Length: 194
Image 1 (cartoon, rainbow, N blue to C red):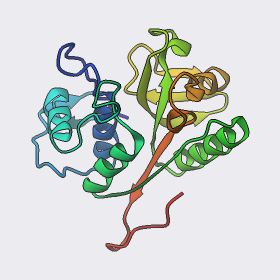
Image 2: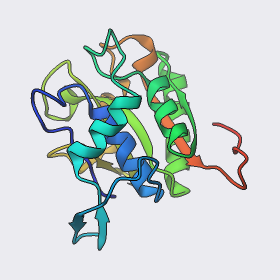
Image 3: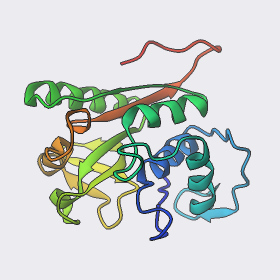
Image 4: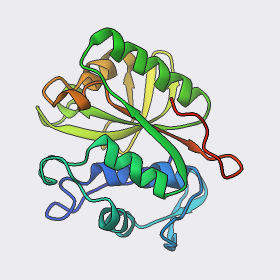
């Protein structure tokens, strides 16, 4: 899966959610903003958007909105961005460990069906800055390995370690075990949500 990165320090510091939206829209072959795709990726043999341009465009319509954007983007805002892009979207979260496990099982089923899932993770649990949340994309799972897009320096992680990051314990409840699901609409009608 082609990753997109919010890498401009003074511009993109809170736009990882918009970068994840770009990755999911691109995966599904959607281009709701009509942007050119000049960046060629040898690993998949396809052209993709310029990171900054697509992140800016998504942010115009669906900007970071958690605590006035200071702490990034809420899952409902990201679901709206995916729906605008032409997908059926829903999200789930839970502070409860057992329900978090159920959400993870739904993520696994979605990924097995070829539907990447946006997830929020505790970057500190993946070797990054402690107490920092990050939206990434799970696009493949081969037990016990989880494959991630949009996470710099961490392309794969063991499932047990991922689950510790997925808990995102220091964030408000709607960000604990939080996943944003997306799938194509069929025949103009939305599929049932997760």
